[in-house]
Length: 276
Image (cartoon, rainbow, N blue to C red):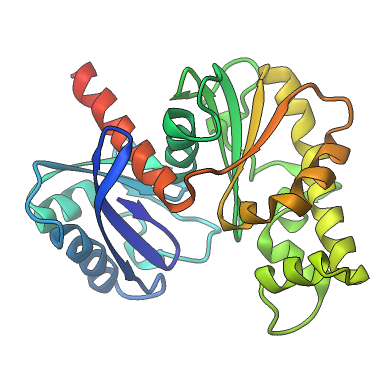
């Protein structure tokens, strides 16, 4: 199951294919019962299952199944709750959790843009910056070249939090037009509008300069950009490459999009089952 800020998708996965799915919108500002009930109902649409693995945004203690969600502006009503217990009761199943960015890039490693690479760094660009550092498809949360927890969002860039410069929120703020979506900014940039092109180029060049030292220190052979924004790869790649300078790394955009975190969560579930 992939739990986003305002949407949840549940899926049954067979190997590297999503064979059945169900979706629903959720209100991230709703009550605990509203949020938990909406997520569980989507899972129940696919029938009784022995277990579920949920890809959840952080800050989250994935081993304990408890999120603080501090500083993310959503899920406040379920912060601090034992979500393993809550979802276990609603789904009548064993429940595990995985970081949503880890799941996304694991999916791309298993069946998409990062297939065949041993060392992978990926980011998911949305209202924030999710990140994953993988070795042989397994998330790394520490060690050489890996920031604490495998997270990039706590880091600063140009004296500010990175998400103030590189995120869809930052991009829209830089563009400065009310009521315009990120998709529209990219469409205007593609059509040649100077202000939109400047914002897109600047944002992606900053991303390249920010992530370059992590790529070098970790020894990544591919850098994957995920999220719906990655569909504008024709604009992203040249600017990102300029920002990376002479950093030796392959660039790739998501091939699986919404399926990526579902396949990654399934991979995490299979590995946990084998380890047990």
